[in-house]
Each structure stands twice: as C-alpha cells, then as structure tokens.
Image 1 (spheres, helix red, strand yellow):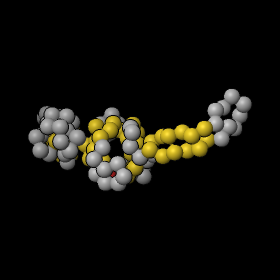
Image 2 (cartoon, rainbow, N blue to C red; image 1 turned 180 degrees about the vertical axis):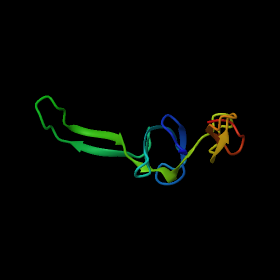
Image 3 (cartoon, helix red, strand yellow; image 1 turned 135 degrees about the vertical axis):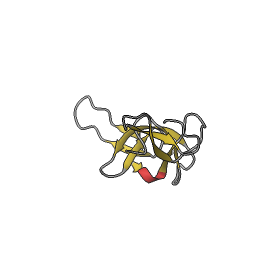
Length: 104
C-alpha cells in the first residue's frame, strides 16, 4: 500500500520548500518521486522549435523525493504517518492516520 497517492494534501519536510503544503499531481513509484503543485519550481528557457510555438521562460513543478513529503490528515489537520487499517471483515485495508486513526 502506498503512503502517498494522487490528490493527497502533503507537507514538505526538507529542502528549499520546507514547511509548504501542496496537492500531489503525480506519483512515480518506480523512482520514488512525486510532483506536488507549487513545490519544486524550476525555470526552463524554451526555444521556439516550430512556427506557432512560443519561446520564453516557463516555470514548472519538478520531481521531488517521496521521502521528503508527509501526508496531512484531513481530520486533525497535522502531518501524519500512515498505517494500514482493516475496514471490515472482508480483509480490505485502507490508509489511516497514526494519530487519530481517521481514514485518509
């Protein structure tokens, strides 16, 4: 079970954007990276390649390490560790906050 999924609210633990909150746009589990909205902004100077393309400076989010983000619990509004919790007798597991045991 993955700790962070798409559309989760996360907080950045370290780096230049430490303490900022954002929404996960993409998770790349093969290389343990995530793209978070408004976090890890890089500047790219784009050259016009074809007629009709626009050249200029673009700012976009880059991949950051999965270990540098922590999900934020929606009920207690604090960063939380994620644990697996059995929902019912069928054996299905879901992600739960370690502090308040709320389902994420």
